[in-house]
Image (cartoon, rainbow, N blue to C red):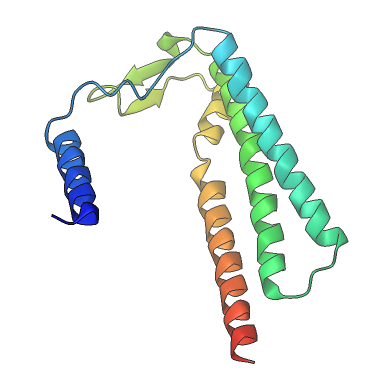
Length: 156
């Protein structure tokens, strides 16, 4: 048997066993309060700073082309998303289990009235997909534009 075929077959068998015979994956490691939240919030701040720098650097360099504009729009939406996520995580720390009503298990819950400022921030932060989805769309448009420009240059 050819060595490449033998290696590929072994890899496929191992992958098949992992998919068909799953065990406990231990993929999620939780940390007790407060260090897990501190690290998570610092990651949002670092990500926001990185997107701010990328936005600033691409604007300062005045790169020509539509792809760079799309990339800056992506950075802007990502900065807003990170800010909203930071606010939402902070609001979550001030809520109690009694502030929610769980319907049909833990996947669906309602915020109980009266609506306070913290509950409003929490609820608004749960709508983060309204920033994340357009952000990913503009990243896609940026990369597509860069790809099309590289094809044009290759043809010339």
